[in-house]
Image (tube, rainbow, N blue to C red):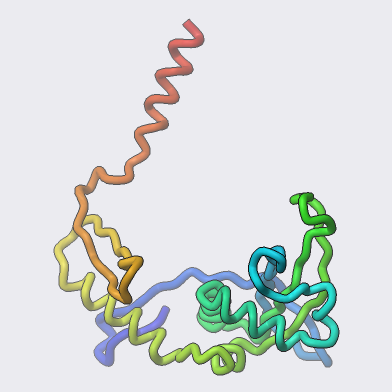
Length: 184
């Protein structure tokens, strides 16, 4: 539970996850684990992880931070919110390019979430500021159902009010009717 104002009237309850507990040097650390999957470097203009992961792990990470900054930022924010002491990121590659079921773990790397956030310029204060702004905006609205969407071509978020029955799962009723018809 995080207080979002000084009065304590606006609180944010968050359910977060931790993946493991590891004892290092007699100290128990809570950790989150994530995997970065190698994309075929011939098509992406990137670097071949199998050739570079041991000597140039920093270059591999920098490329991934550039290409997948949103994903890594989300993982880092989740680790900070959950109170994780460490993050473990694995570099995963397919054994064969066309085989989607067999993979190799090429390397793993440990990070402290706040240090990784600083490395990728993820401002924790800015992160909470955005959450607070969204909460205040929604708090001012009447009860209902809303959709928050990012404009794909601009750095603009739009909030749409939608009818309460929007996104209800009508498929269940149709599926049940289909099964009833088939049984008869």
